[in-house]
Length: 355
Ligand SMILES: C[S@@+](CC[C@H](N)C(=O)[O-])C[C@H]1O[C@@H](n2cnc3c(N)ncnc32)[C@H](O)[C@@H]1O
Image 1 (cartoon, rainbow, N blue to C red):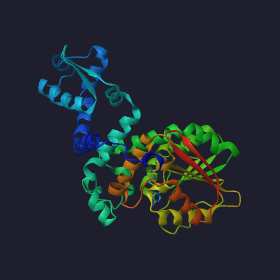
Image 2: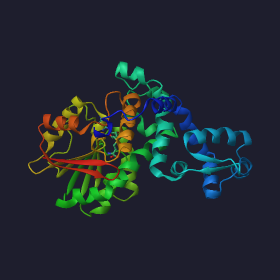
Image 3: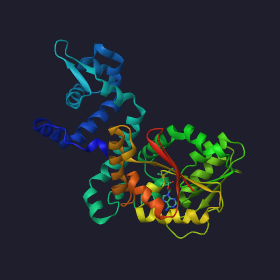
Image 4: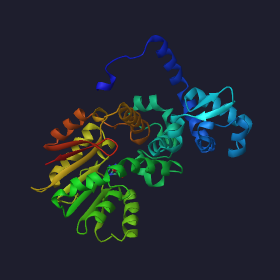
C-alpha cells in the first residue's frame, strides 16, 4: 500500500508521536466528553472570539474544574487553541469536525460504545483466534448472534456506524445494480433490510429475498412490513457457514454488502462456492466491500485497518477488511469470474461484479 512505504518522521517527531499514541485513549475520551458535555458546542457558537472558562461553565453547566482540566487536554489534542492575552479558548478546525462531522461521530461512537472495553482483550483475541473482547457486550460466540440484542448504547452505535457507510453508497449502487432490470435479488447478510427497502422504493416490480441468521431476520421482516413491502421482501433464515440447500436458486442477482468481510478467507471461499452453486446461467454476483488498499486517502485506510481489529476482538476473531488482492484470490478460488470492479463509491466502497 503506497501510503505506507516510508518512515516519514525525524527522531524528535517520532518520540513525540509515540507519546501521543501512549496517551491516545485519554485524548479520545477527552474529545468525546467535550462533545457530549456541550463544551465544543459552546465554543462553536462563540466562533473566533472564543470563550473564557467562566463563560463556558455558564453556557454548558460543566464545573470550572471540569472545563479547565478537559480543555487543557483539548489544547494538547489540538481541539482548541489558547489566547493568552484574552484568556480564552477557541475551537480549532479539528474541534469543529469532532462536533459536527457525521463520519467522525459514527466512528467515535462505534469505537467508544462497541469496541473500547473489549479492545483491552486484543492480545488474547489474537492468541486464541476468538473475539475475546465480546464478553464485555454479551455472552455470544460471535457478535452476529447478538446484534439484535446488543445492550444500548452499543446497539445504536453499531447500526449508526454500519448504516453510515452503506447509506452514502446507495444512490450509485442502485443505478449500477438496476442497469439490467433485475426482477429477483437475493441479499445475503441483508441485516435490517435497508438495501431491500431501497430496492423496492427504486423499482416497483423487484422482489428481494433476504438471507440472514434467523434472529436477524425478525428485524428485517418487521421493517419490510412497516414500509408496506412484506409481499415483495421475504426472509430466508440461513447460516451461511453451514452447508445450505435453501439459498434461492437462479436469482438475477446475488448481493453481498459488507458481508464477506465477516469471515475468514476459507469461509469466504466456501460461501462463494455455495452462491455459485445456486446461480443460474444469467445470474450475477455483486460484492460490495471496503478495501484498505483501494482507498484514495490514507485516513480511509486508517479507519479500515482500525475497524479490522473490531472484527478480531469483538465480531468473530477471524475476519477483517481484506486487501483487495487477498479478497480476489477467494473469488477466483470459488470459481467465479470478475466481470468488473468499480472503486471509490460512497465513502470508499468497491463494487465487484462476478459471473
Ligand atoms: C456487517 S452486516 C452487513 C449488513 C448489510 N448487508 C450492510 O451492507 O449494511 C453483516 C450481516 O451478516 C449477517 N451474518 C453474519 N454471519 C452470518 C452467517 N453465518 N449466515 C448468515 N448471515 C450472517 C449478520 O447477521 C449481518 O446482518
